[in-house]
Length: 181
Image (cartoon, rainbow, N blue to C red; front, side, top):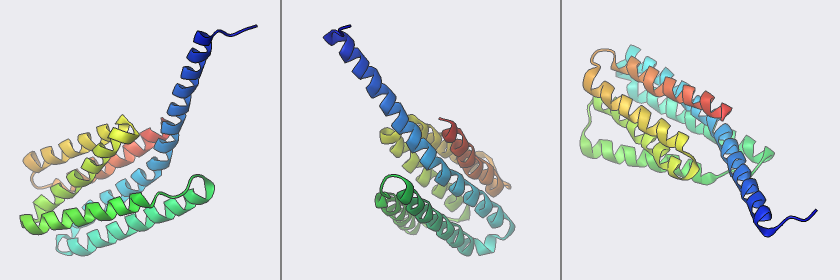
């Protein structure tokens, strides 16, 4: 049995599509762990911030420190089992934090503005990542940012708890959804 050039080309194209889907699925599964971790930490941070607003600086330093530690630990564990750890992820997180701190300093944000700003900033990063890694990241980023902004405009007294559900819960749900992809 002989395969003509057109059939061989079609078969190779099918294989390329399968390989691309497998790579994207693997990326989604790897990223889902971190997305779930950050979502849980963000939800806890917003709830703690709602209960003790005067301790917000310490709460968020702790939340972000735990998140960065979890990111490093997950990356190092992933490094042993699969591909090399991408230090660019940690550098990107540090750059996002630095940009956020600069913007907060220049903008003189109040507590409510800060609570809206940080999820919008970080989910913007997810939206940008989606341009390279798959539209699920873009949908996640744009969706949570839009909901956070809508909450800033229309949710008054329970804004921190709203963000716990929208930002933290949204990240957790997206992480579990990405595991299935």
